[in-house]
Length: 137
Image (cartoon, rainbow, N blue to C red; front, side, top):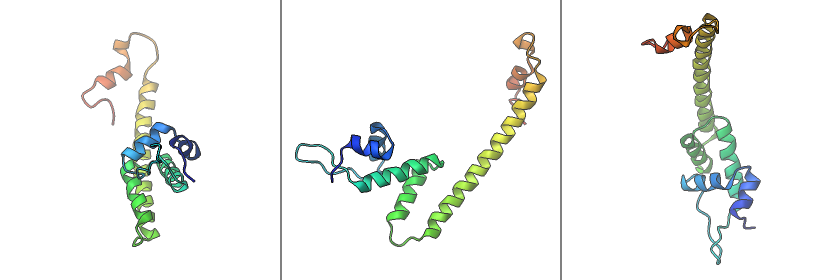
């Protein structure tokens, strides 16, 4: 059964422009066209777009998603390679969490130092942000 871009977008939970973008990025193949020129997508395209959407929600970049898609279609790869990709993403997420935790702690310290009264020229938050090291430790 041939599907239109709008139908594929709806079934995959994406908008039409996102489907078009993923097609331009090579994450899905350009579909064949009907005699009247309409793109004809398949259920396989819907499945691939759902995978892309879920991978994006888990923080994978488009490059990482392309790598996962290649692993999926390459008959010589096994699940160990997919697992390695997921483990690398977990390590990346852990690093981001550590960075965010440091940022939060610094901002909390600066916020505690600010009474919220007086001129901004005397605000410890502004002073720290204007410091050569950005007030971030």
